[in-house]
Length: 209
Length: 275
Image 1 (cartoon, rainbow over the protein chains, first blue to last red):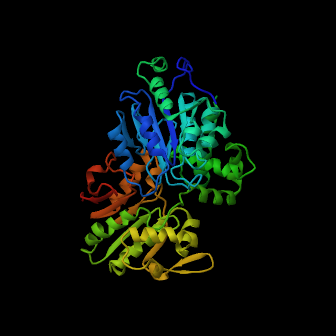
Image 2 (cartoon, rainbow over the protein chains, first blue to last red):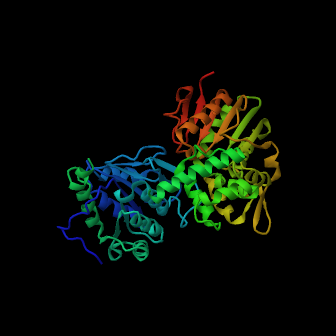
Image 3 (tube, each protein chain N blue to C red):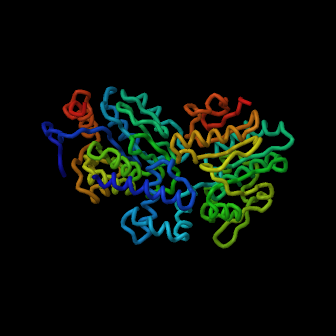
């Protein structure tokens, strides 16, 4: 397992967005992670969480209460903005267009899931290339493994929650089996790492400006 | 050039060829969705690139027939978003009942699951015999499936649960008969439904319609095409007519926003206020 030392410099890259895939046990993990993200976070965060198709907006309201950064549901054709956490709406796939706007679809389920993590990750990997960070958290299926590989192939950074610390280890383990991920971390470490990379005055962000 | 950029060129060329050769225009569809579909199609052929499929597309009409089916949106279910149908029952049907007779247009009906759901609601509200439903799609294969009204048995459990959440007043089982592995919907539901081929991208208006239902079709279109279709809907509706879109499809920033008032923001149900 690779660990992240405090002094390790972040790859000299121009990160623009973070995509996160999470399933069973997701709300607790997201609460820990997103609480560490500041309101002036310089990247966009886009999340696919497997939910019941009739799920209401409870998770969004709860996280909005608990976190500094603004949390909302992604709307179709909306530009992906920095400093906002977007959730895929239940029962729709969430895709990112080349011009970095959201699209929704009700296409077939992928990996028995709609929204599917793979669908978001694959389209985000093409839209952002090396400007993307992909994160797989706790979950009890294999969705997201292929998508994370695509992110890696397109030059993005890949992070997986340490399966030993995940409430359900299948999803992180499947992602690690599919690709050689860059970092394996606890949820808290992932939150701190992202907060550092997406700090408005961090080197990677300044380089982009 | 990056592989993705090359593939974008291929997709554009392919869609041009589809349009010029067969008249079906997918050029204003959401690019990322259409690209996924083309890749799916590609994976079932012997070709390695999207541009590789172009010559077969041009010279082999049967290839186009399978293509058009795969490119069109056919994923739907009965009483998808049960609460929408409940809202329809409680807020829209009472308005329709103020007319002696109504015309309903279900646009982009695909394989028909939602049209039959609507028919069941109308029936239970005692209004079915005063309605004519035009159910349209550009995909003839899907339309034929819609006409048959035969659906896989394994889906019925979900449909029954949806029906109950949608405020159904009877037993869902009374609307279908079961065969070996399929459920056949009661033909009486079809009596007032007219299935017809209509392409939202290229075809014109219907006249004096009282209710248009078009859910989860616009999400596949770009803004330009969305506006074209929304104007088509506005011009097809009678004064006071109702437009029901998918729950993630907004009217707010469209060119017809000022012609409608909102009846349900959550379920995107609007009433035409302009003449």
